Image 1 (cartoon, rainbow, N blue to C red):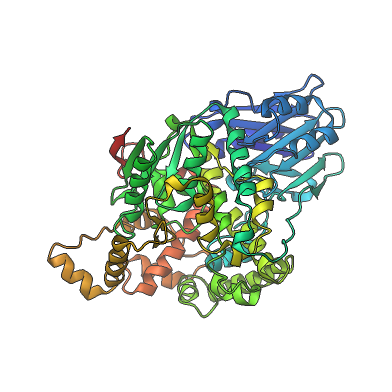
Image 2: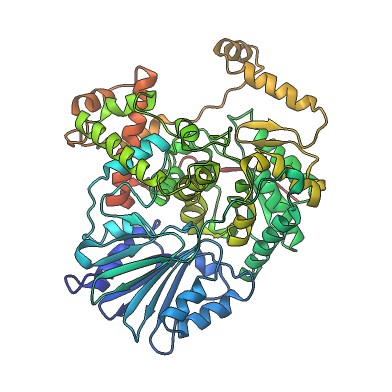
Length: 614
């Protein structure tokens, strides 16, 4: 479900504004929208995947209260449907306390008719996107940035710090977006807005868990972690959908598959070929694991022209450029998700059981940050400098550095602070947008482990205890040893399922290392022993950059014109064009969201089903 709320203090017709905000968030122009005028404003909603829930996520109380929930909350210790029904009848304080009991990714708007106040409640990590703007005491709220922009009241000038973070980290920092006047809602908070005063006051209801005393892996009680995961999976059973599970060759999706089976659910595995990584070891291991565990599966092979397709353009539209997605595998996965699936199981949370690969020494920010973002002297920023005006480049990087210092100061300067920083920024602003913003439009997004209990039991552990694979392998050995008969492909690495020597993995590692050499690749290709798989990334850039305004004062006009009048001559030119692509498409998506889509008559890139096996 998509949300919108407008309280403009009588300056505009709030109901009309909400209709515009919802229309901007209707990706395919086919959604069913509704709205309700309240004292001082209006609240609206657009039905999407919530139509697959067996209970309504919009509730009206007998006294005129209104409750609208987006996302897929779970109530691990009771009935979600009963809690929502009860909350709709409560006053603001009691209703917000009830909603704060929920886990999973969600955001809720609650209107207290008697007090004439609006409450915004976000999940404990703020995973479900919710954006707001507060121009001159007004309040604009939407599940997508483009919804806020469509109001016509928000400051839609580009945010220098936001763009600096995007080009440095590949995602935004804190509550920043790419727009100066639009922010993420506060995570894990209850925010109360009074239309009479124009004040919106947030209050956090959840705090990050404290580190546990130093211990070894042998000391870890995997039973407690296992129980927390089982509890969250059982919570999703109330939605009454088996759905499909996004299955890769990695740890997290295999763990979710085992958990769903144990809970008596039977989701089909949806496997998307990862052709260019280790020659699709990721997909092959996923198929082997599904067969081993006796699960029905379906395999999709994205075609070479996927990025020229409307499916990719729709990903751009829904994700709102939350990540640099050209060539990104998760964008191809989105092309395989369909409303017919009704629900999607995704392994976002179990990834928390590994230490950060950007902090291998388990240090503080001095050790972490040089690995985590691209500095001004990097090739990435040379590419930025190629297409943007020098003054804007300086402002982006300078404001980004200011924002980074401010954000880092919120956390302890140790490995636990670094991990919290990573979750609150990279996980929330980049990784979490896929299940909750993209997949969740078409199907209910089920994310086992997005619960306070699971995070409290995992994040108290040090990175040395978790390791890259140690904690997850221990969990498998203790609870799902039958899943350890097939190797893993995780983070681009091939990993054995057990301590025994695996000749197949050793061979694939050697071959993969050799294939990084251009001469080896060319020789094997000529001998028919290597078949490269390259995606077409040119067409979408050429088509969507056709109407770039090179006179934009933020751009280096001469360099942009030169770059677009021919094929990039150097790798730096290619990188520069890609950054121009993100800049232009982001602004296109936010201001003319439906213009980014390909005409219905031209539909290359549809995923090809290569297998459907029981």
